[in-house]
Length: 169
Ligand SMILES: [Zn+2]
Image (tube, rainbow, N blue to C red; front, side, top):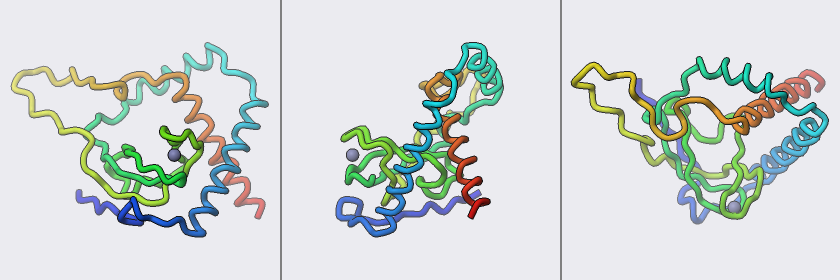
């Protein structure tokens, strides 16, 4: 399988924001504010609920690091950062995953320009001995943290809200 990776707005350092960028950033801020209001209303997660969800997701293996591509992205706030996306995604700005800028703290900050760098990790050499199931690198393999689960939960809520709006229009 060959994936054609897209690029946009190169060179990143000279990119000028477009009207569409301002609009997308505005939408992302609206959605983030909406999610915050919803979360403020929602009851806090019980330990029981967290444990159940963790069990559910624990049986669902997260892809290994070598299935990720690294991207250099320019955020709305002008900072250039690196992100990782699954190798099947042809561009890094799909889905409801606006970044928080780790340099200036702008949150959310939409991706306005990007270019692919390369694989996040080399695939392991084929094992000489029978020890295949000892792969565990970094924090990505294994159980997710409560913060990650809560972030996913809020992303789902955003999707639901979008669908509601689409239906209402
Ligand atoms: Zn920034």
